[in-house]
Every structure is written in C-alpha cells, then in structure tokens.
Amino acid sequence: MKYLHTMIRVGDLEKSIRFYGEVLGMNLISKDEYPDGKFTLAFMGYGKTKQDPCIELTYNWDRDSYTLGDAFGHIALGTEDIRAACDRVRQLGGKVVREPGPMKHGTTVIAFIEDPNGYKIELIQTS
Image (cartoon, rainbow, N blue to C red; front, side, top):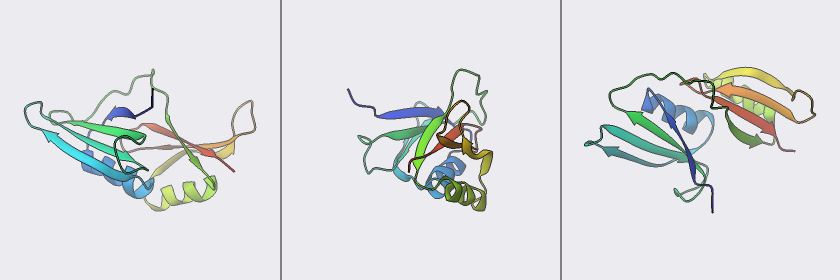
C-alpha cells in the first residue's frame, strides 16, 4: 500500500489552485475536465506525478459551495520555519486562524491556516 491523495471538493477551482500553488508552493500536477460527468479534477502536490502524495481538488460544475461538516479534521504540512510560513500565507492573502505555538497538552509547535473553501491546514514545525 502507498498513500496517493486526499480529495476535497472546492467551489472555485482557479482560486483553490492559486492558493495551493502560490501560497503553499505546491505544483499543479494535472488538471482534467470530465464533460460527461460535469466535473474537473486538479491534482496538487510537492512531487511531479500523481504517484507522489497529492491533494485532489474536485470541482463539480454545478456547485459553488459545500457544507464542510464536522467529520473532516485537517490537512497537515511540515515546515522548518513555521513563523515565516505564516507570514508568507498572510502576505499572499491567506488566513492564519491559529498563530504558531505549542499544541495543547504537548510541545510540538503548530499553527493553522485556512484555504479559500474553509478547509483547515495544520502547519507543523519540523526542526
């Protein structure tokens, strides 16, 4: 077994691609339209192929918003400089919803940001 991707539904595909690409530095690995199904899939990640771990952005042509619910938690990304990462997110118009600091009941330094669809992304200090 190998982890491949996590799929999230997005209301504005281009805005989401810009966020994951420009704010988080991911590559757009592929973008394919499925006219018969009326949806588009865009794969974003730090690798070069869909065999590397990715986030699959699913855009259904007839929807522009979703109720996120309370079952999904977050996507986690490691960073060597969490404060600089949060500053970069803010500079590029992103939203930091929890400033860097130790996690509750622990010492690992974390922060949370939010993508344009409201999905939470945890940043974890790795060094």
